[in-house]
Length: 480
Image (tube, rainbow, N blue to C red):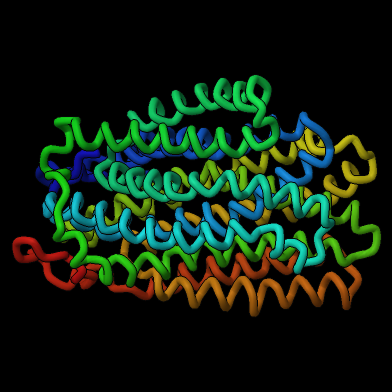
């Protein structure tokens, strides 16, 4: 994405005459919108393909039997909330560091920050590996079925190598994203996905590994993906300025990285965990089999629709961080406004699709007429929450671009748990609204989160929003 100091005016002046631009330019900066759409689409596709890799392994495992399906599904859910989501969050530090560094033309620092992030990821991957190794014991402590817990524990053990590769992949994706190198990512996600289907089939059906081959295939594919991306960064001439080889200097930026990485990981995990708690609370209700299935469908719907807005969130983060790094806070604010308008258009498309196709969508999860009827009654509420979640996703991207992760952690903690969870529990159990109460409470939490982030952003004087040092000294971090 090319950044210029001069933007084309929406209203041009010639002599004493005012020549108005095209009407859509007055509503939306067409060039900025076009750049963001072209940036967002590859990110949406890439994110979707990487999301499918572990899911395909679960599908192969599920065809081996009902117990295998239950164990693999539980293991994948546990791996997501305890590991993969955490790694996505950790990499958020690079959206600030590399994004602002690229805007400030401190190109060498991008490669150094990438190496630092990989060091940080390695440390936390080791910790997560120990947690995953004792998955069975943890699930038994949480009163899960012993057989399912044992199967899930076995599955998770073979996922352990994947957490290292997944962390490195997320770091490289942020390194490329902040330089607006996104189109090649479609290739680097589609090829592994195709190979993964073959690898999983071979390990599950053509080797003695059987069930264990499914999670092992995820680990193998993710490592192959990482090696492909690493080779691209190291050997492509496109990154001659931003990747200048390995450097011991990266160790000196570990604290700088952690100051942003840990709050960024907390931002992501607090939201993931809130939705998992909803599923747990649904299991405490009368007719728990139906309520749990219903909430699970809603959570999955919310997660899938958020994958579409994720591309715009990444665009907001990149554009804001690049412009702030270049010392153009006004341009950063303008880019954010364009992203919010695009988010409104995308949200409208998503809720129309849900409104007209909710029966078809719910039918993909269940054949139960009761669940289909209940999901239809929840659709208006779910549509509202999708709009709110899309908005907060964009605002969270702006927060990462500005480097306000620590503030966002307190916002997420207060809104999702003190407001969202409390409201959900009261409405569901005290007022007997059950599933509608749970989702209404969570929607209230998301609304408060979006409103708070919007208030913080609106109260910020963008013209005074500068980096700690406008022109960092040679070899010094722009945020150090």
